[in-house]
Image (cartoon, rainbow, N blue to C red):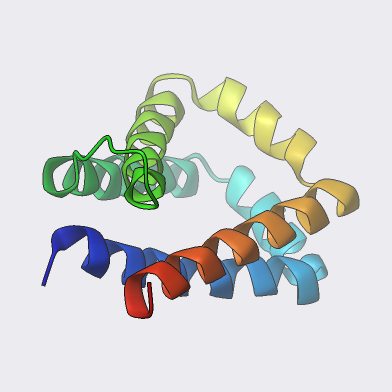
Length: 127
């Protein structure tokens, strides 16, 4: 099976689940985010995980094509850059996460994540 399809299936499930959680469990997500931002170790682990996931995705999926696979490539690079950013600029990352942690942005993020998840699932399973 093509790497793009496998990664799209995995990301589709993750994005859909995360999007629905942001939409229906905002209070829990907000609380968890606030608690993670209070602990430098938690933030470091989040940054390191994003770096590892991004590096793996970029190594496996480096396809820059004008179709749905570009979403997987962009997601990989975004995770890689996010991990680097968190590790090298943790205080700035904390400030940005605190700004993002509000009702309206969580709803918008949830809708976008769920839609991207559905798109990836459709493209990878039925497209």
